[in-house]
Length: 132
Picture 1 (cartoon, rainbow, N blue to C red):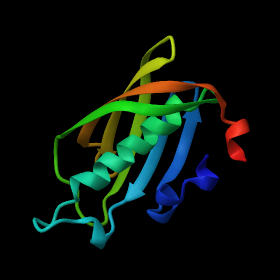
Picture 2 (tube, rainbow, N blue to C red; picture 1 turned 90 degrees about the vertical axis):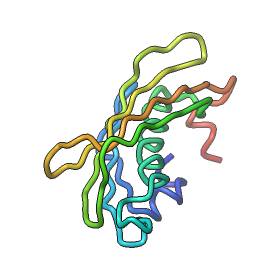
Picture 3 (cartoon, rainbow, N blue to C red; picture 1 turned 90 degrees about the horizontal axis):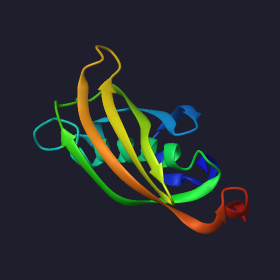
């Protein structure tokens, strides 16, 4: 999945851990990621959290997509901050899942954002088959 994930690779996001129902992703805030208030644009924070969510909900070898997601921005991040998003599964039921993601600044472990995503597994689509 990472090999084909051009957006994630282009932004320098690294997947640092993955396991059943969990994933960790890291990204450094680049100067072009800050807004007019000199803080990280919320879209990039959402993208980092969404990336960890995507890898966590796809960790069962079945293709899963986001059905819904929301984010709460807790504190600002700035140019040069290394952020880590930790996604953890809360529950799976049928083809659905709910995942929570916390985005923290690595340096001081302060919480930057909290994200909750709902996933839906696609019928008859497994990760191995999806590589064609």
